[in-house]
Image 1 (cartoon, rainbow over the protein chains, first blue to last red):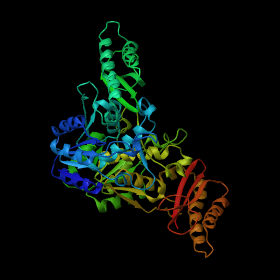
Image 2 (image 1 turned 45 degrees about the vertical axis):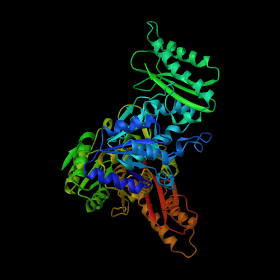
Image 3 (image 1 turned 180 degrees about the vertical axis):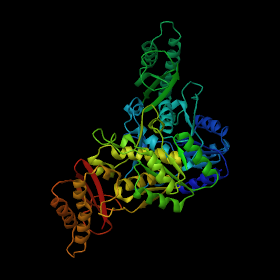
Image 4 (image 1 turned 135 degrees about the vertical axis):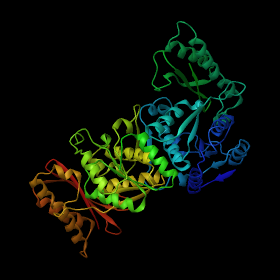
Amino acid sequence: MDLVRRVSAMAEIARQARVRGRRIGLVPTLGALHDGHLALVGAVRERTDLVVVSIFVNPTQFGPEEDFAAYPRNLARDTDLCIAAGVDCVFAPPADDLYPQGPPTWVEVEGPSARLEGASRPGHFRGVTTVVLKLLHVVRPHVAAFGQKDAQQAWIARRMIHDLLLDVEVVVTPTLRDTDGLALSSRNAYLSVTERVAACAIPRALDAAREARTSPEATAESVVAAARAVLGAEGTLRVDYVELVDAGSFERATSLDGERLLLVAVWSGRTRLLDNVTL
Amino acid sequence: MDLVRRVSAMAEIARQARVRGRRIGLVPTLGALHDGHLALVGAVRERTDLVVVSIFVNPTQFGPEEDFAAYPRNLARDTDLCIAAGVDCVFAPPADDLYPQGPPTWVEVEGPSARLEGASRPGHFRGVTTVVLKLLHVVRPHVAAFGQKDAQQAWIARRMIHDLLLDVEVVVTPTLRDTDGLALSSRNAYLSVTERVAACAIPRALDAAREARTSPEATAESVVAAARAVLGAEGTLRVDYVELVDAGSFERATSLDGERLLLVAVWSGRTRLLDNVTL
């Protein structure tokens, strides 16, 4: 497996692969890989000949009070996992390579970028879309994969790719869960034992919403309330938002007609956790 | 010559050209072509095998009070000029193709986008960079050409391409002038005879600045003042700005050390005209 550190080297690998007619797949990550990332790798490997995993803790998507410095970094372990998963190329560039000196260029999807995660983390999605576009330009993939666990991110990345007329197929893979139900996330490593036990109310809250959805009298309000009740019963959690959105437009949904996503953001201790369920 | 109207058709032409190892060149225009555009075509043709001229009056780079509706449109004449100039492909898409429905994605270069033209035309450069990036994604050129007449636009496009890590060579061609000295521009068509005579003070002002630069006591202020004096003597002109910038950073220059650009924006009647000279 190739470990590629420089943008110029990655661009040359992509160029040669394209010349030879190979199909390229990209899994953009912040590293600290877990089985959720490896499921993305599997989905991309089925569709392409050259699987690239990018590992880059992107500073521009973290707020000044957030966990950029503390974010787990372990390139040796990540590359071992990638080798075992049949990845062809790990692209782990230095920040200077992805952010050349000079006035920065920003890419931003209007509308949904300012809501939910965007409201709680101002500038977050601008950082995400900007770095994803740079990675797409360097790696030039035919397929890029995002996880449904970060549903809003996946929606915004897909929207950017579509609106900017990039010829990239977007694949979104289902959320993987631990045996206790908690969605896999690199940030789970921050949780103490008691914080983790409390956090397990999140998947139970999503189950309660799904259950509430089956009632003949179910409404947008009743499914949100069912999830909120479970989260509220776990006294140590702090709810950031529980919101129902239309899966197509990512606008707030006031009815249950059509595909709906129930999105949850919750603090357990000092760790912010996301999860969601399709209703 | 191919006249291509749809994004999907243009993308397929670009894909096939790339597979065959042909080098693609792009000249992005708003149409109403003149010899300045054809010089861009010539510069691109020297460097590539497939020359694409895009013709698109991009709504997002016009302000609500500006001349979007009045901007000259003449596809038949433009395509005749392109055929005569040896262009391989005119790409003239409908707005719906370049701007799919849904929340828009914007691309913006921070800093210089807000000054000079950006201050006089809020949102202008955001519209320019967004549409240029879309065109680059569809046409996938190896080379793209911009005119030095719109120096700030050329600088910002180059900066965006560099910062977003696009593998596109940027070529900037010198300003062409009519026999009366006025820089070629599609907007010259708006000028009445008397407005045109007045507008010819613009190249004279640039000459005066160049002359002032040769003085041993020349300063940033003295070259700007020399240009302003010529423009001020032409009573019917209204000066928007006269500014000296560093050609590398596009920041305002307070000295004459290093390559400098003197930029001028002037209204003659209801027509806004740009010009510049390297000092």
